[in-house]
Image (cartoon, rainbow, N blue to C red; front, side, top):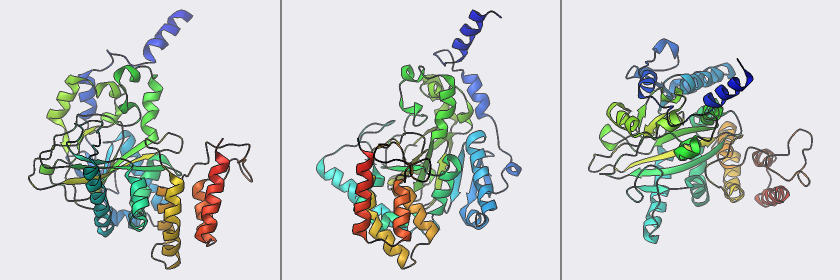
Length: 398
């Protein structure tokens, strides 16, 4: 083949365009089923497709390093090549922290209503439901004790690490779909899922493949979610379809989704995590009395860009005295303390100003998480930690 023909062929195959989406091909991906023997740690399959896990069993299995690796490997396989969804029953064995955080969220929502603020929505009509953007920071600053009890959760940490590895970045957005609230349009999520078809087509094919590896989508149920309350709608296996970011915006494919999607009920304290490239949408709330509240967790790779800006210095200031106390009185285990720190502080040392913050004793400077770990282990007074925290932040600035 001539060199100019090879170049032309690569240019044609290297990008998706208006003619790339084919409903028949997408339906073939979605027609797959799962086999329970392929997921030995699952309790059962829903609709012969989605693995459901009993988190009591998972916690017992993950006690050893080998068991922990087995759990993470199985979840990663489901998210990457399987149905694309894991349902985690009893992710919160004790739903007390969920109720405590729900109360804080309701207070924040009431404040938004009082101020007249209307939170927009990516895939639904603005103002139809209740949203809290940047809920992670708002919760941490308003109720650090509640934040600590909630994000000490070992299952959230385990599934985040299974997909993204360590040093992940936690963000959350609260979505309350009120009775009568309409469903969202089907979509894929951050990064490419939040861009126009014109923008999506500018990214080469390999970016479409790695974009889902940068983010994990999840939701914690803050109330029981029977089907009539409109829990999330899914189309299993669609994360494996290459041009899916364009397909998600095709009217014919959206209509097919609406007629064929899968819906999974949840109970308070359950969680569901899924590949961000999976076609999904919040369902319509057909109930008369259920305000369906979910804490939507969007966890980002240390190597990607988080969706929301966080003042993690302020969050760490607020949280450190609480974690110090909870550590000293053994209310939280050392592993649970690490989970909370991972949800609050920046785990990645970059970007930074290497003139003022050079790597010492390694390839990277100390991260915010590492500073908090060190301070807790050495039992620094809060004033000492806050001084070091601000000094570190100053070194990172230009």
